[in-house]
Length: 115
Image (cartoon, rainbow, N blue to C red; front, side):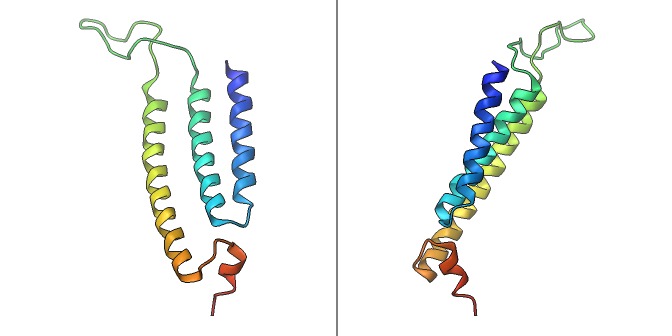
């Protein structure tokens, strides 16, 4: 399963960089979303994709039984999702405001408005 995920993550990174190199600001934000999703999948994949029990320690034991899932990558990815959503919301508002001022989606036309 890991080689398939590696190929999928690589394709997502390639697509994200391709989209971010376009002249449209909307495509730039779509590339940013793809980049954050690829990073989240990379964290999950590098942490190991084995199924396990919840990391709960039964009463009377000093450590959890074998075969438990690691909760740290899940917590990191959850935090990254929340941060990516905040960045996306800010970018959408910024795009809307920039489009109202410039009346164009092209990044080169936005450079021409600098005075």
